[in-house]
Length: 220
Image (cartoon, rainbow, N blue to C red; front, side, top):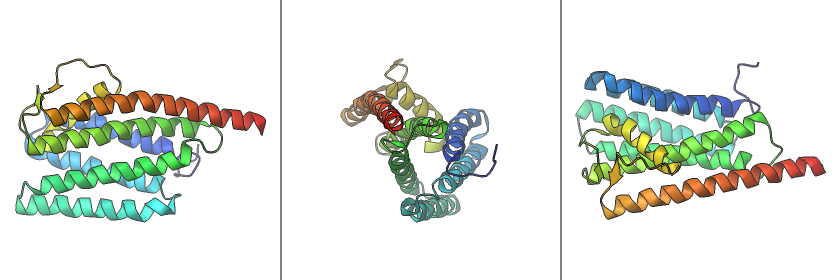
């Protein structure tokens, strides 16, 4: 298998990077709080790099993603150097914009275009992971403004809350709804049911896209 990232395997690399981010965020919770943030930020930077390399075949988004990644690194360094917690919101906004840009780029490349192959199927998994991550960032931003918006959550830094809210996001996205974490403020409740709706519609859209692409291949 060609180990270089190309248009036949780019979504494999991106999906593994996103899974690695989620797994690492859960593992770093056992580390001391000072180390936790550095490890998580390092993995996020690595994920950004893999996403940029995977999206380099889409020039429209490549430069935009590079700019966002650079801004995120600078904002994180500034926060660590100055100890200004308010910069956390800027860091989260940049992360959300990066994941959204990545989501848009992948969508343009795999949904209702071309023929179905393994890379495209894996790309649809990457889209699903990105949806969950975007809502995770949205919940983290809500916690910055209103720390008591969710039951089962403590008022901590976004790095310490990342894993728990990622878990909550994907439980909501798949409409499992275990109930150990629940929204209690009106705005957080709106975000939660919007994510549940998006999860249901995403599955329908992906199935329709794959069927449409497969029919086009057969007619071709």
